[in-house]
Amino acid sequence: MKNVAVIGAGTMGNGIAHTFAQSGFKVQLIDLSKTSLKKGIDTISKNLDRMVAKEKITEAQKEETLKNISTFTSISEGVEYASLVVEAATENVDLKLKIFKQLDEACPEDTILATNTSSISITQIAAVTSRPDRIIGMHFMNPVPIMKLVEIIKGYNTSDEVTKLIMDLSVTLGKTPVEVNDYPGFVANRILMPMLNESIETLYNGVAGVKEIDTVMKLGMAHPMGPLELADFIGLDVCLSILEVMYNGFKNPKYAPCPLLVNMVRAGKLGVKSGEGFYDYSENRRAENVAKQFN
Image 1 (cartoon, one colour):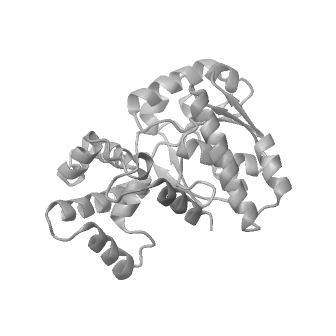
Image 2: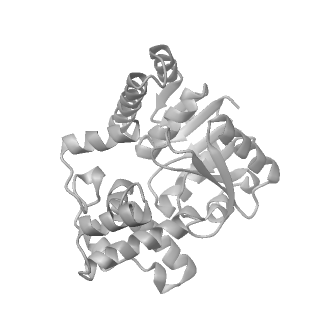
């Protein structure tokens, strides 16, 4: 398996493409937008430059990584020779189901189709394909080139053979794979998102301010980043989508999104990606935050 297609050139997609390409895989990065593809490649190049500056890789390794990536705006052309496809589109169930129907029609019969979803049912996604045994979740963490964890999620029909292959592949990428079962939010977000939501509720109820809440969690609980800053980094729209999936999946009020989170997303205050969330992010601050991840 040396030929991998990645769907989506956004934060997660370009990070996944970067990781595979740096490990020697030929990567087809696919996005409908040429602008998004250019931005994705530029991001990969800048992140590789930081790694060169820190002497984590050589200039030759950087160039080889970039050579391993080709870009496409057509799914059918981009996946033609792929042994594995990793979908990293927006966390929207209707969009993902549409993409997987397209992938099922366009890919060779033996291609494994993985999704980077952080909460949506793998079994539901697999049900729209003719190969449910070859559908699996690969939930990478952000920033992908740095974070070691990959949640490997088996759908109801995912074969043991495919699961083992993807677990072994993750190790090849330098990651630590953890196999989990297919329930809303899986493990990472089932635990993380209620904590972030409760932090937002604490702010909403006037218990303390943004910096105060984050300081308590950083200094008192030894968290490297406060929960509100982390929510900004993840994207408040992503947090909301995951909480809605869990709320609808479990029908439990403890997963209901805080009204403050809902209103902030409606107002377009999505965190780092929009320039404002619980914190205000200038262009310099954004660059500084990204650089910190690669130190």
